[in-house]
Amino acid sequence: MSGQSAQVEAPPQKQQQPQAQPPKPRQQPPHAVIVLNDNDHTFLYVIDVLRRICRCNIADAQKLTWKIHHHGKAVVWTGSKEVAELKRDQIRGYGPDFYAMQPVKFPLGVRIEPMPGG
Image (cartoon, rainbow, N blue to C red; front, side, top):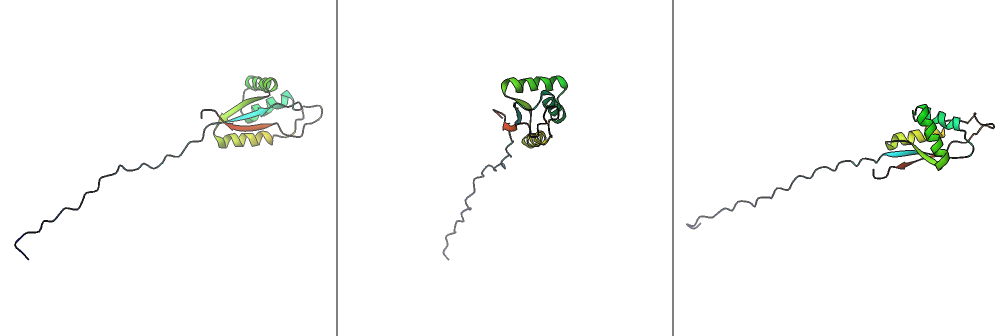
């Protein structure tokens, strides 16, 4: 060994990276339950469905039924996708329309859609 002292270099320091935040789960947009008009189901049946499944009061159920009749469809409920799917299935499974002269045995037309801008 010679008389020179060896210089020891400090190990290079790592630059601290900002810790990545775990990604936040994406929220589903609200979904709309849309009832479609047909020429077979009666107003009384549609009102009954809206009152029991969508929990509308009588006045709102009547207004929505007229809107379905005049515009061909109406949004009858909005909320989470899972509950919208449940309400759609409940409307489809509500049973025959015995208010009609000849019982209507097929379900109301109903679909769900994501709400715009959601």
